[in-house]
Image (cartoon, rainbow, N blue to C red):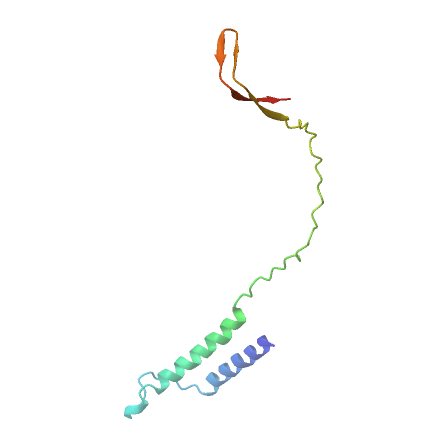
Amino acid sequence: MKRIVAAVAVVGLVGALVATPTPALAWGHSHGWHNGEAFVGGLAVGALTGVVVGGILASRPAVVYEPAPVYVAPQPVYVQPVPVYVAPQPVCSSYWVPQHYGNGIWVQGHWEQACR
């Protein structure tokens, strides 16, 4: 549809140029305010022609289709723990050793601890 509209516009512009063969003069007439009319008209027609022809000849952007994202559920991974031997905590008891005389020396009373 765009190409058809552009082609019709280009044919219309070419037809207008052929129908009115008088050249547009950039310096205009000698009436003070008409000096830029022909220049502005030529500028407008040139811009319109550039837009139409540029739209026809311009390359189209490449369209890239990416595949839809795929969800993959993670597989459950079970790693059996390595068997570890854990020794029971030692059972300790503290007791008071009273002062005493033994082996030729005097031993003051003190606490001792026995674990098994």
